[in-house]
Length: 305
Image (cartoon, rainbow, N blue to C red):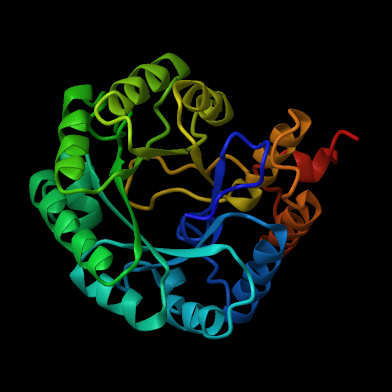
Protein backbone atom coordinates (compact mmCIF):
# COMPACT_ATOMS: atom_id res chain seq x y z
CA UNK A 1 0.00 0.00 0.00
CA UNK A 2 1.28 3.44 -0.87
CA UNK A 3 2.26 5.27 2.30
CA UNK A 4 0.67 8.70 2.79
CA UNK A 5 2.86 11.73 3.24
CA UNK A 6 4.74 12.32 6.47
CA UNK A 7 2.77 14.06 9.17
CA UNK A 8 -0.49 12.46 8.08
CA UNK A 9 -0.61 9.79 10.80
CA UNK A 10 -0.51 7.25 7.95
CA UNK A 11 -4.05 8.05 6.89
CA UNK A 12 -5.04 6.29 3.67
CA UNK A 13 -7.72 7.96 1.57
CA UNK A 14 -9.76 5.68 -0.71
CA UNK A 15 -12.02 7.46 -3.22
CA UNK A 16 -15.02 5.28 -4.16
CA UNK A 17 -17.19 7.73 -6.11
CA UNK A 18 -16.78 6.14 -9.53
CA UNK A 19 -18.15 2.90 -8.11
CA UNK A 20 -20.31 3.40 -5.02
CA UNK A 21 -21.03 6.98 -5.98
CA UNK A 22 -22.45 6.18 -9.41
CA UNK A 23 -24.13 2.82 -8.95
CA UNK A 24 -27.38 4.40 -7.70
CA UNK A 25 -27.61 7.01 -10.44
CA UNK A 26 -30.30 6.34 -13.07
CA UNK A 27 -28.58 8.58 -15.61
CA UNK A 28 -25.70 6.49 -16.94
CA UNK A 29 -22.44 8.43 -17.03
CA UNK A 30 -20.62 7.95 -20.37
CA UNK A 31 -17.10 6.56 -20.44
CA UNK A 32 -15.50 9.85 -21.45
CA UNK A 33 -17.04 11.70 -18.51
CA UNK A 34 -15.90 8.98 -16.10
CA UNK A 35 -12.43 9.18 -17.63
CA UNK A 36 -12.32 12.95 -17.09
CA UNK A 37 -13.34 12.56 -13.45
CA UNK A 38 -10.83 9.76 -12.92
CA UNK A 39 -8.03 11.84 -14.44
CA UNK A 40 -8.79 14.71 -12.05
CA UNK A 41 -8.99 12.36 -9.08
CA UNK A 42 -5.61 10.86 -9.98
CA UNK A 43 -4.17 14.37 -10.17
CA UNK A 44 -5.62 15.18 -6.73
CA UNK A 45 -3.19 12.84 -4.97
CA UNK A 46 -5.67 10.39 -3.43
CA UNK A 47 -4.03 7.14 -2.31
CA UNK A 48 -6.55 4.68 -3.78
CA UNK A 49 -9.28 5.26 -6.35
CA UNK A 50 -12.02 2.72 -6.98
CA UNK A 51 -12.77 2.97 -10.70
CA UNK A 52 -15.73 0.59 -10.78
CA UNK A 53 -17.20 -2.81 -10.00
CA UNK A 54 -17.37 -6.03 -12.00
CA UNK A 55 -21.05 -6.81 -11.78
CA UNK A 56 -23.67 -7.83 -14.32
CA UNK A 57 -24.40 -4.84 -16.60
CA UNK A 58 -28.13 -5.60 -16.55
CA UNK A 59 -28.26 -5.33 -12.76
CA UNK A 60 -26.02 -2.24 -12.58
CA UNK A 61 -25.87 -0.58 -16.03
CA UNK A 62 -23.67 2.20 -14.66
CA UNK A 63 -20.78 -0.28 -14.37
CA UNK A 64 -21.02 -1.74 -17.89
CA UNK A 65 -17.82 -0.01 -19.07
CA UNK A 66 -15.70 -0.74 -15.99
CA UNK A 67 -13.35 -3.09 -17.88
CA UNK A 68 -12.62 -0.49 -20.54
CA UNK A 69 -12.04 2.25 -17.96
CA UNK A 70 -9.43 0.11 -16.17
CA UNK A 71 -7.74 -0.88 -19.43
CA UNK A 72 -7.45 2.75 -20.43
CA UNK A 73 -5.91 3.92 -17.15
CA UNK A 74 -3.62 0.97 -16.37
CA UNK A 75 -2.13 0.76 -19.87
CA UNK A 76 0.06 3.82 -19.48
CA UNK A 77 -0.27 4.69 -15.80
CA UNK A 78 1.37 7.92 -14.71
CA UNK A 79 -0.01 8.26 -11.18
CA UNK A 80 1.12 6.61 -7.98
CA UNK A 81 -2.47 6.06 -6.85
CA UNK A 82 -3.68 2.47 -6.58
CA UNK A 83 -6.65 1.65 -8.82
CA UNK A 84 -9.10 -0.60 -7.00
CA UNK A 85 -12.16 -2.50 -8.19
CA UNK A 86 -15.03 -4.24 -6.43
CA UNK A 87 -15.77 -7.89 -7.25
CA UNK A 88 -18.46 -10.15 -5.81
CA UNK A 89 -17.42 -13.52 -7.24
CA UNK A 90 -14.87 -15.49 -9.24
CA UNK A 91 -16.13 -14.24 -12.61
CA UNK A 92 -15.67 -10.65 -11.47
CA UNK A 93 -12.15 -11.52 -10.35
CA UNK A 94 -11.34 -12.94 -13.77
CA UNK A 95 -12.55 -9.76 -15.46
CA UNK A 96 -10.58 -7.60 -13.06
CA UNK A 97 -7.37 -9.56 -13.57
CA UNK A 98 -7.79 -9.28 -17.33
CA UNK A 99 -8.05 -5.47 -17.36
CA UNK A 100 -5.36 -4.55 -14.83
CA UNK A 101 -7.06 -3.97 -11.47
CA UNK A 102 -4.34 -3.29 -8.89
CA UNK A 103 -6.35 -3.82 -5.70
CA UNK A 104 -9.38 -6.05 -5.35
CA UNK A 105 -12.12 -5.16 -2.89
CA UNK A 106 -14.29 -8.14 -1.98
CA UNK A 107 -17.01 -8.26 0.63
CA UNK A 108 -19.79 -10.23 2.23
CA UNK A 109 -22.73 -8.89 4.19
CA UNK A 110 -23.36 -9.58 7.87
CA UNK A 111 -27.07 -9.29 7.02
CA UNK A 112 -28.51 -12.49 5.58
CA UNK A 113 -31.26 -10.53 3.79
CA UNK A 114 -28.90 -7.96 2.29
CA UNK A 115 -26.48 -10.71 1.30
CA UNK A 116 -29.13 -12.56 -0.69
CA UNK A 117 -30.38 -9.38 -2.37
CA UNK A 118 -26.86 -8.26 -3.23
CA UNK A 119 -25.21 -11.56 -4.24
CA UNK A 120 -27.90 -14.25 -4.33
CA UNK A 121 -26.05 -16.08 -1.54
CA UNK A 122 -26.39 -16.38 2.21
CA UNK A 123 -23.70 -14.86 4.44
CA UNK A 124 -21.77 -18.08 5.17
CA UNK A 125 -21.57 -19.08 1.52
CA UNK A 126 -20.61 -15.56 0.49
CA UNK A 127 -17.77 -15.44 3.03
CA UNK A 128 -16.32 -18.73 1.75
CA UNK A 129 -16.46 -17.56 -1.86
CA UNK A 130 -14.97 -14.18 -1.01
CA UNK A 131 -12.08 -15.82 0.84
CA UNK A 132 -11.43 -18.14 -2.10
CA UNK A 133 -11.45 -15.25 -4.59
CA UNK A 134 -9.30 -13.09 -2.31
CA UNK A 135 -6.66 -15.81 -2.05
CA UNK A 136 -6.65 -16.14 -5.84
CA UNK A 137 -6.11 -12.39 -6.17
CA UNK A 138 -3.22 -12.51 -3.71
CA UNK A 139 -1.71 -15.44 -5.59
CA UNK A 140 -1.86 -13.27 -8.73
CA UNK A 141 0.23 -10.64 -6.96
CA UNK A 142 -2.61 -8.18 -6.35
CA UNK A 143 -3.46 -6.15 -3.28
CA UNK A 144 -6.66 -7.25 -1.54
CA UNK A 145 -9.16 -5.72 0.86
CA UNK A 146 -12.04 -7.75 2.28
CA UNK A 147 -15.07 -6.19 3.90
CA UNK A 148 -18.03 -6.83 6.16
CA UNK A 149 -21.03 -5.04 4.68
CA UNK A 150 -24.01 -4.00 6.84
CA UNK A 151 -21.62 -4.27 9.78
CA UNK A 152 -23.44 -1.67 11.88
CA UNK A 153 -27.05 -2.48 11.06
CA UNK A 154 -29.39 -3.41 8.23
CA UNK A 155 -32.42 -1.67 6.74
CA UNK A 156 -34.17 -5.03 6.44
CA UNK A 157 -33.07 -6.79 9.65
CA UNK A 158 -32.30 -3.91 11.97
CA UNK A 159 -29.43 -4.31 14.46
CA UNK A 160 -26.69 -6.76 13.50
CA UNK A 161 -25.12 -8.75 16.38
CA UNK A 162 -21.54 -7.61 16.81
CA UNK A 163 -20.41 -11.19 17.32
CA UNK A 164 -21.60 -11.98 13.79
CA UNK A 165 -19.32 -9.24 12.46
CA UNK A 166 -16.40 -10.47 14.57
CA UNK A 167 -16.94 -14.04 13.35
CA UNK A 168 -16.61 -12.84 9.75
CA UNK A 169 -13.47 -10.85 10.55
CA UNK A 170 -11.95 -13.89 12.30
CA UNK A 171 -12.61 -15.97 9.18
CA UNK A 172 -10.79 -13.38 7.07
CA UNK A 173 -7.85 -13.22 9.47
CA UNK A 174 -7.57 -17.01 9.67
CA UNK A 175 -7.34 -17.03 5.87
CA UNK A 176 -4.44 -14.57 6.04
CA UNK A 177 -6.49 -11.59 4.88
CA UNK A 178 -5.48 -8.69 7.11
CA UNK A 179 -6.81 -5.66 5.24
CA UNK A 180 -10.41 -5.48 6.46
CA UNK A 181 -13.09 -2.84 5.94
CA UNK A 182 -16.31 -2.46 7.93
CA UNK A 183 -19.05 -0.88 5.83
CA UNK A 184 -22.11 0.88 7.20
CA UNK A 185 -24.23 -0.02 4.18
CA UNK A 186 -27.53 1.10 5.71
CA UNK A 187 -26.12 4.16 7.48
CA UNK A 188 -27.23 2.96 10.92
CA UNK A 189 -23.90 3.43 12.72
CA UNK A 190 -23.41 5.89 15.56
CA UNK A 191 -20.09 7.01 17.09
CA UNK A 192 -20.16 4.97 20.32
CA UNK A 193 -20.96 1.82 18.33
CA UNK A 194 -18.20 2.59 15.84
CA UNK A 195 -15.62 3.02 18.59
CA UNK A 196 -16.72 -0.18 20.32
CA UNK A 197 -16.87 -2.40 17.23
CA UNK A 198 -13.61 -1.23 15.68
CA UNK A 199 -11.93 -1.59 19.07
CA UNK A 200 -13.07 -5.21 19.22
CA UNK A 201 -11.97 -5.85 15.62
CA UNK A 202 -8.53 -4.31 16.05
CA UNK A 203 -8.01 -6.35 19.23
CA UNK A 204 -8.23 -9.55 17.15
CA UNK A 205 -4.92 -8.90 15.41
CA UNK A 206 -2.59 -5.95 16.08
CA UNK A 207 -1.04 -6.44 12.63
CA UNK A 208 -4.21 -5.88 10.65
CA UNK A 209 -5.18 -2.79 8.69
CA UNK A 210 -8.71 -1.49 9.20
CA UNK A 211 -10.76 0.60 6.81
CA UNK A 212 -14.16 2.22 7.27
CA UNK A 213 -16.97 3.06 4.88
CA UNK A 214 -19.88 5.13 6.21
CA UNK A 215 -23.09 6.14 4.49
CA UNK A 216 -24.67 9.40 5.53
CA UNK A 217 -28.30 8.23 5.78
CA UNK A 218 -28.88 9.90 9.14
CA UNK A 219 -26.25 12.62 8.92
CA UNK A 220 -23.69 10.84 11.11
CA UNK A 221 -21.14 9.92 8.46
CA UNK A 222 -18.46 12.42 9.39
CA UNK A 223 -18.93 11.87 13.13
CA UNK A 224 -18.54 8.13 12.56
CA UNK A 225 -15.37 8.64 10.52
CA UNK A 226 -13.75 10.51 13.40
CA UNK A 227 -14.94 7.88 15.88
CA UNK A 228 -13.22 5.27 13.69
CA UNK A 229 -10.07 7.40 13.53
CA UNK A 230 -9.97 7.61 17.33
CA UNK A 231 -10.42 3.83 17.53
CA UNK A 232 -7.30 3.28 15.40
CA UNK A 233 -8.69 2.98 11.88
CA UNK A 234 -6.25 4.32 9.27
CA UNK A 235 -8.06 3.87 5.94
CA UNK A 236 -11.16 5.86 4.93
CA UNK A 237 -13.51 5.33 2.00
CA UNK A 238 -15.38 8.41 0.79
CA UNK A 239 -17.03 9.59 -2.43
CA UNK A 240 -16.65 12.82 -4.39
CA UNK A 241 -19.67 15.11 -3.99
CA UNK A 242 -21.10 12.70 -1.40
CA UNK A 243 -22.56 10.54 -4.18
CA UNK A 244 -23.55 6.96 -3.54
CA UNK A 245 -25.66 4.30 -1.96
CA UNK A 246 -26.19 0.57 -2.28
CA UNK A 247 -29.05 -0.26 -4.68
CA UNK A 248 -29.74 -3.47 -2.76
CA UNK A 249 -30.33 -1.97 0.67
CA UNK A 250 -33.71 -0.75 1.91
CA UNK A 251 -32.94 2.98 2.06
CA UNK A 252 -29.98 4.05 -0.05
CA UNK A 253 -28.09 7.23 0.84
CA UNK A 254 -24.83 8.85 -0.15
CA UNK A 255 -21.37 8.70 1.33
CA UNK A 256 -19.34 11.26 3.21
CA UNK A 257 -18.05 13.68 0.56
CA UNK A 258 -14.34 13.22 -0.10
CA UNK A 259 -13.77 16.95 -0.45
CA UNK A 260 -15.47 17.59 2.92
CA UNK A 261 -13.28 15.00 4.64
CA UNK A 262 -10.08 16.31 3.05
CA UNK A 263 -11.10 19.87 3.98
CA UNK A 264 -11.41 19.03 7.67
CA UNK A 265 -8.21 16.96 7.64
CA UNK A 266 -6.31 19.88 6.17
CA UNK A 267 -7.74 22.23 8.80
CA UNK A 268 -6.23 19.77 11.31
CA UNK A 269 -2.88 20.03 9.51
CA UNK A 270 -3.17 16.59 7.87
CA UNK A 271 -2.96 15.41 4.26
CA UNK A 272 -2.01 18.77 2.84
CA UNK A 273 -0.50 16.83 -0.05
CA UNK A 274 -4.02 16.28 -1.43
CA UNK A 275 -5.29 18.88 -3.91
CA UNK A 276 -8.61 20.05 -2.49
CA UNK A 277 -9.08 22.22 -5.57
CA UNK A 278 -9.07 19.14 -7.83
CA UNK A 279 -11.63 17.38 -5.64
CA UNK A 280 -13.87 20.46 -5.66
CA UNK A 281 -13.55 20.63 -9.43
CA UNK A 282 -14.89 17.07 -9.73
CA UNK A 283 -17.70 17.72 -7.22
CA UNK A 284 -18.83 20.84 -9.07
CA UNK A 285 -18.74 19.05 -12.40
CA UNK A 286 -20.80 16.17 -10.97
CA UNK A 287 -23.41 18.65 -9.72
CA UNK A 288 -23.50 20.23 -13.17
CA UNK A 289 -23.74 16.88 -14.94
CA UNK A 290 -26.58 15.52 -12.80
CA UNK A 291 -28.30 18.90 -12.65
CA UNK A 292 -28.86 18.95 -8.91
CA UNK A 293 -27.28 19.99 -5.65
CA UNK A 294 -24.88 17.38 -4.28
CA UNK A 295 -24.66 16.19 -0.67
CA UNK A 296 -21.23 17.70 -0.12
CA UNK A 297 -20.92 21.02 1.70
CA UNK A 298 -17.51 22.50 0.90
CA UNK A 299 -18.06 22.76 -2.85
CA UNK A 300 -21.01 25.08 -2.08
CA UNK A 301 -19.65 26.99 0.91
CA UNK A 302 -16.04 27.20 -0.39
CA UNK A 303 -13.10 26.12 1.79
CA UNK A 304 -12.23 27.99 4.96
CA UNK A 305 -9.06 29.99 4.10
